[in-house]
Length: 386
Image (cartoon, rainbow, N blue to C red; front, side, top):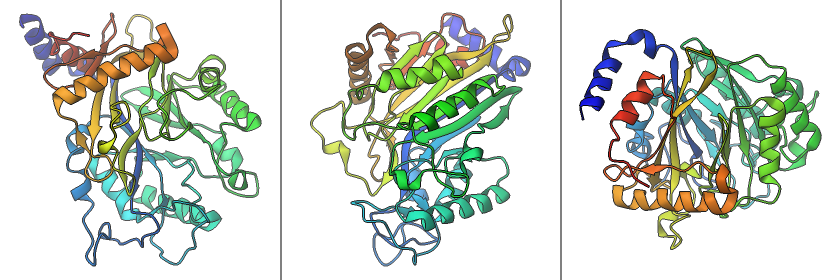
């Protein structure tokens, strides 16, 4: 306890050291409306009167405390109820005020590229682009990527936080009709070798301390990796210098891979997916939760290299309606299950988390910590065990 107290006092008194680190928070799929339901500026229409956005986010509000807070926006963003949906099983559109609400909570990094980007066709994509441009004019600090002309999508976005530069770009699965070109805005496809290799080449030519790639990929409802997924994702690390892959789409959690100082989240699962199935009813406990993760990134004062010092994983429940952290004992079981899944799927490359018996969080702490916030978090977890 004396060590923990000393580190906490150091964190409180050392603003210089703290300025050299960045905390990233992230979760998976986000949508703020039900299937084919009209949008409303005040909230979600469950009845004649809208349910306010804050009703859905109250449980995760305390978690959104990073310098970079990421979400995958799995919906068309539009204020119009006049656009026509595609012939799909699910068609989601959310009012831009839902995105504004997320920004007010602290979200500032958004992926727009996924298989719901085009739920309302090219017109819906144009609506999303226009609304996000308006929102960025109101909130200049936010960054988003995913729908644009091809040449623009091949230029990773640059974010600077606390003296550390981050590069960010996106790729997805989906309908080839909505592929980005020089004449038509669209999305980059992870399964298209030309799109993917050109994007990874762009990453290799981008100067940044830490490179992040958001990928929407995988068979829905399947916790195991898809065939070829591991090698395709690792390609980005090897040839693009990507440091972090943020995976989503399967609506279930998949393992985390640690490759040197680089990390692959194969799937974060659901985050706040209004309109999705209630996964809390699933018997398989590998499939009944969503992953919220917090990464502590710092610049090593000796080498100058930017790396991840520590990772937290917080299991979420009720992701179909009012997402919140899972009760501790159940969350601990999910961390154990994730460790087992990782070992069976990717062996020694799997990131093994220690379980905090009190909070249910999964914790990884690097052997060499420099980040004050990472030291504080790790020092407070003296009773961790596998």
